Length: 114
Length: 137
Image (cartoon, rainbow over all chains, first blue to last red; front, top):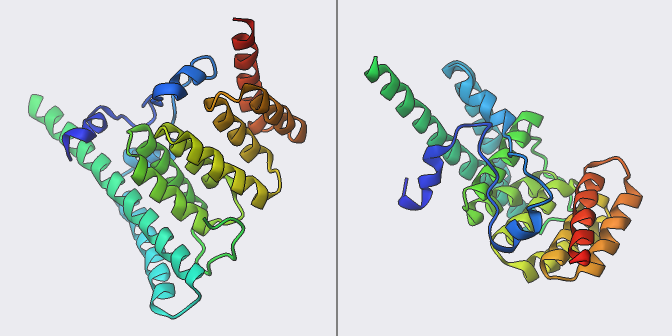
């Protein structure tokens, strides 16, 4: 993780406030004071390792299927869509791995304090 | 842009789509605009008939301060999706950031008219209230 990603360290799934910047913040100040919630990520982070691994395996299976599309010649749009979908899974799984790392760090800190 | 393109033969589960969408929103909230955009673009590729990831890409462009790009992108999306209310509300939001308040209000009202109970109407009502408050100043 870089310094730029330092916000991530304060992340707790489900209670991270939606950050708005610049003009968006001005225009939105009256629109919503609500926090952005991530119910699925929160639930997944709180799940047992086995459940997390099952979900990751399901994602990897979809990725393999997407990869199958890319391995066979098809029209340029289908190829572009397959690549975009694969990148989406890659980025999301990468972000989730960072969240898991934070979770395990916190757990390790907590057990160290006991 | 994959607006209304032919669907891929790969079908993600609903859980997977929710996972991807929430990851995109989280990346955006963390200021990782490129990552968020990449994630939402992939969801748009997986669900080419769903306006939600398309609206989310517009939101990322706005959050990144790329207001004209957001307006152009959402305008094209609106044409492709045929005045879909949720996209219309996001287009109106982008217009508002470009200080085109009257046009923004017009599109918010249109979105509310098309879908009086949905999330587009909720968003539109809040913004109309804001525009009216700004008009009083």
